[in-house]
Length: 482
Image (cartoon, rainbow, N blue to C red; front, side, top):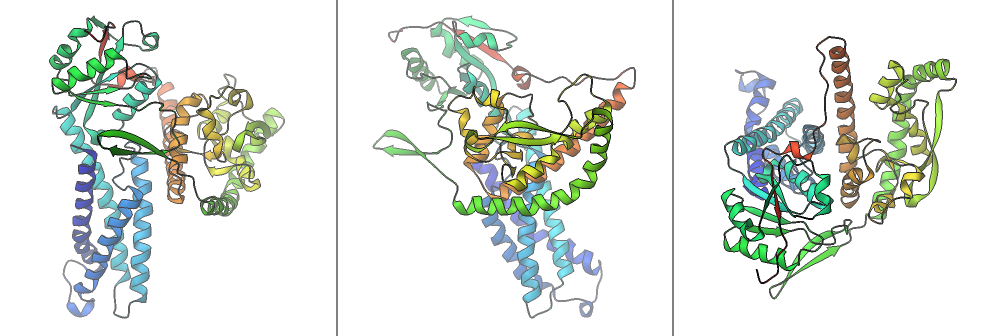
């Protein structure tokens, strides 16, 4: 099933639920049995249902409310649907207040609650149905030609998008590829190049994706031609892929495909409104954070002599600034349990609200890194310095922290920079709260497990363990005549 078909089915289910949700909302407001004199007419709510349907179509198109964009995550689903339903119900309740005829605003509120629950349920059921189709074998089996960073990232992104109904079953690479040693392949099959297509057909591979720096090599073009002859669909990642901060558009120029790269800079109004939100929400969060930080600062002063520390970080355009945080060493073996909890739920970073109010940081953006790491940035990595750093960001809600590489975080940071919006900022803030709550829950569960003799350790899986099946094929180079 193609992604756009999944989007249409989800939108259709949303619109159907918008009509169905009217009945339990009225039942909850007036009871299962009611007299007509005790309530307003049912048809009075029908214009609101029709308005809700139109508004939801517009919101779905604008906010990508199928919730598969960027990969499926339940926290992202809840945050995006919460914002969309809040926007929708604000308009409906305002219309209900201004309307001359009587309309039960309590019934409208119940209607909004049912919409919220139903929309989340629809997306969860869509994911379950997609997983069921994948378990039943309704998957396109994909082989990626390449073993470099682009190939690995492509495999991870495909694995995060269940709506594509694709499964990466292996990598195809030259026998002397230096990147092969970086993969933890379970098995590696070396075969002559002229038998590659036969092996792909035997493994029921339906798609081959070229993710090579030089996809125009004669042996690669020969492989692509043979795949197409045997009904295997061929795709490729255009090079140079590192031109990331641009949106591609394909132009068909009399049969010649031309990939256009459009720069999408954020407007000045966005950055001005972002600064305004930083000041307003930063001040509000400061008022909440002070009672939380005060006991932590007192405890750290008693054990370590001071509660805060300043650390040098690189901000927008690489300018250095002093970032404030609690005086807790990262990943220290000598840390007390109190300090470990502070670090685990990121309370050590709350003092950076001061940097936000000073304008050196934003609430949402790429996390700032120290100068010794920034000076080793490639030109591609330096793109993450184009905006102010943030207290949290898209990489953080995906579970990446300081110990993760800059390359891993930059993929998500550039995805955020490419699609800036106030809605995305609020969604990331909501997802951050979810991430911190889950991190605290997991820490408590692990602490309880470690106190028992049969405690379990959680180990990270590498890329190879993410796939249901792994097929590695090494092929020898051949001339175009082969």
